[in-house]
Image (cartoon, rainbow, N blue to C red; front, side, top):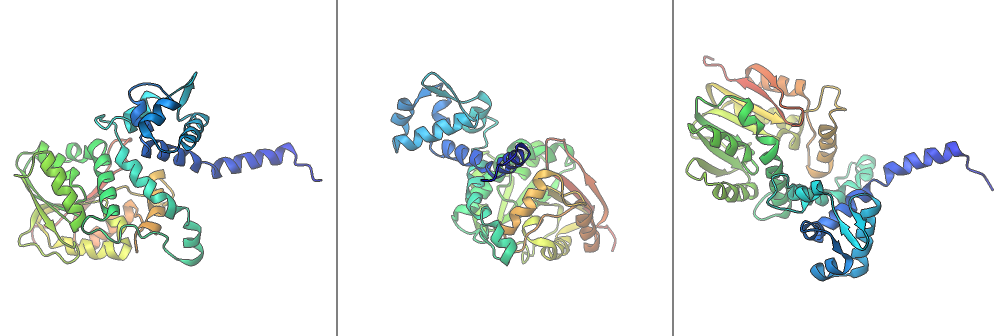
Amino acid sequence: MQIVDLADIKKQVATLGVAERFFDSIVLFALFDAGVLKHLSNGPRTLDELQGKIKGDRESLRAALDAGVALKILSKNGEAYQAPESLLECLGREKSPAYVGEWILFLQALAAPLLQFGEAIRTGARPGALFEDMSGDALPARRMTQAMDAYARSRGIEIADRLDFSQGGTLLDLGCGPGTYSLAIVERNPKIRATLLDLEGPIAEARRIVAARGFTDRVDFIAANAFTYVPAKTYDTVLVSNTLHMIGEEGSKALLKHVYKMVSPGGRLIVQAQYLNDNRTSPRWPALLNLLQRIATPDGRNHAITETSDWMRAAGFTDVHHVRFAVWNVNSCIIGTRPREE
């Protein structure tokens, strides 16, 4: 019988350590989905107490709780399970400003198709194409829009503070999703009037969010395809946020040329995105977002700062420049101006 030496065991441990990381996600998803974290937000609970609240299968619940302790997601004191306050603020208390439950539901929806990514590499098949149906009440549309809103409500709204909108005017948010970025801009700049444009599903969610936050008097809505929409007027500012990565290089070039005609002479285009660096291997999340597009969209891929700037110049924009945000915000933006005289 072959003896495995210590050096090989170390190699195995390191390799399996990477392969087994998905257990952390699975256990976290299960604890959140079953409501465990919500119940633990009021203090430590025993298995019996949690099972009494959740019902369902007792042994499956016990297995998830014990795995949570093993993975250091939870801890156990005697018979009582508990979660750290930081986790409860993010996933146990919906009113917390740190709450990201919508994002967790979105990531959970991605798990199954991502596990088939090897097939996409071998055959070119798309395991998911999750966002092909973005109309009506489609679940992918709602989950993605809600997740984008959750991110934008915290780190994402930095765009409203970093860029100058004090002169007011009209703003078209093209591919608006939940419209959270525009809402932040409108809230801080009383002279701005915003128009949100997206497909039917995201616009329905955006209407709900705008109404809940009390800005319906300064926000208009258009349910349309950005590639075919022809506005009755031009806009002082057009915002295209976290959209180009879903439509790929050729789609991005075509959209930017189309958008050029929507910007008033002297107005500006703001392309906000989670940009790759030019080596395309960093930062971490933009690189993962690039991978995600291969299972979530028909033609998408994430884009880098230099290539996006080049696309904007090719579309006719001048004074194209990149504006970085805070280090904790993976978003940044590229701004270009439509010349006054052409």
